[in-house]
Amino acid sequence: MNRYKLIPIFLFFILMIVFPFIANTKWVAIGTTFLIYAVVALSQDIVLGRAGMFDMGHAIFFGVGAYTTAILNTVYNIPVLWTIPAAIILPIIVGIAIATPIVHLRGDYLLVTMIGFNIVFEQVLANNIFNITGGPNGIFGIGYPSIFGFEFDSQIKIYILALLLFLLTLIIIRNLENSKIGRALHYIKNDSLAAQCVGINDRYYKLFSFALGAGIAGVAGSVFAVQYSAVSPETFNFLQSVLFFSIVIVGGPSSIVGVLLGTFIMFVLPEIFRQLAEARYFVFGIAMILAMVLRPKGLWPHKYGRIPEFVKKEY
Image 1 (tube, rainbow, N blue to C red):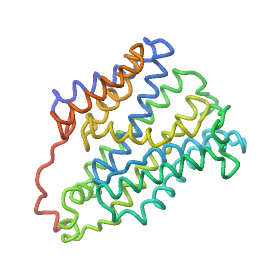
Image 2 (cartoon, rainbow, N blue to C red):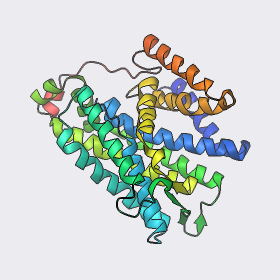
Image 3 (tube, helix red, strand yellow):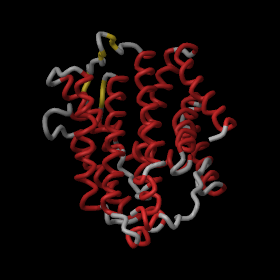
Image 4 (cartoon, rainbow, N blue to C red):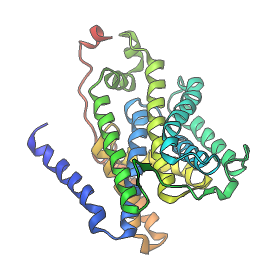
């Protein structure tokens, strides 16, 4: 990567670091949610953009992570920090459990199936089936995480926590891109049959993408629960999955910059134009249509070359 490409990246991170110290409380909260949504969208992109699977139920894993932290903290009085491993592991288990019987499905069939799972998940939360989810009102009074006596008990501190998670997610995604697994997912996405012919285990890598995406979304859900000190079923409904799906598609699948741009357009811009009330959704709906017509690969697409010959030797 040359220095000209590093300059905008450097400026972006400088802005993210100084932002909570120059913005008011409202915008710090919006900035925190932006970082959390960006993490979830990046995890969605692992499944949708890199593995090529139409996951329209990613809010499930986001919700499992959030509710895991909420339940363990408020019901069992477990410190928030100690709930984070469970908020990663449980979504991974749920992700594998959901993906195992349906990972062979393609395109619209997988999309519709994931919509069904998301609706079931929302109903489980809303109807308080296990008597621990709080029903339609959700769970309130979630505490703050504390590390060596330092408590993340303000918007700025939670913003810093979200920023650290965002940076960690970027490191994971960048390492994935340059790894054997990342290349395998790319080949599977572009030509699953050809990938299998050169020895790539199609099923294994698809399950891996679901597991990794679910785990990252889960820990983002945990931070989200801490930010708002509450969780409710409507936060993790089908429309939330549509939001994450749209972020990736509009911004550009398999593109980190594209996902960040998509998050800004789909989440931050509506907040900026909130005074326009419902009219803003009409404007952004038209904008999405134009974006897809004029830029079908996303506003900031990631370009790949053809599958190299050495793949046959590597796999």
